[in-house]
Length: 146
Image 1 (tube, rainbow, N blue to C red):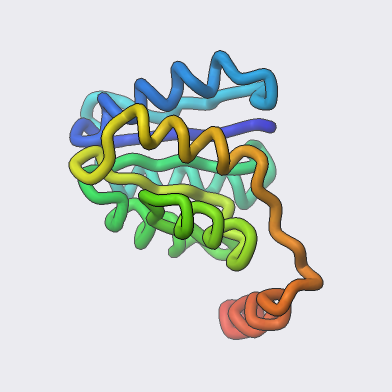
Image 2 (image 1 turned 30 degrees about the vertical axis):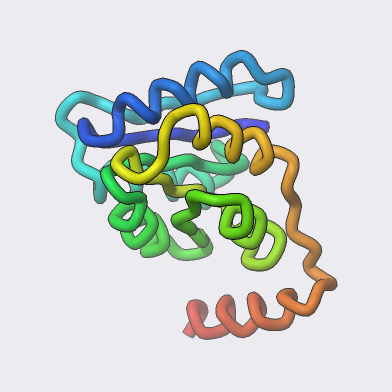
């Protein structure tokens, strides 16, 4: 799997811990880190979401202070669904139910060991388009296409 990741300065420490885990994971073939010391959360979010939308990455991870700002910004890129998730239920639901390609986390919300454990689970999660959520996602996609 090819993962794009990014964070502004207020998410750099957690992002670095996640990058280290991803680089050590056999399921991950490439980690593209878009972070710079002066990048803003909207800019890194747009860039990461565009990498997913245009196929340069399979999924993305964004980290800011809360994970909310990055999710809002990344979701502005057409065809991209970004979700803020800090626990087992929301991480699982973000992919299995909502087919979110971008996971957003907050450095001020979750400790690095917990975030890395959730990313480990996230790498194996898949969306089933024939599930009850398939029709709901089609409804969202139709609205977005208007």
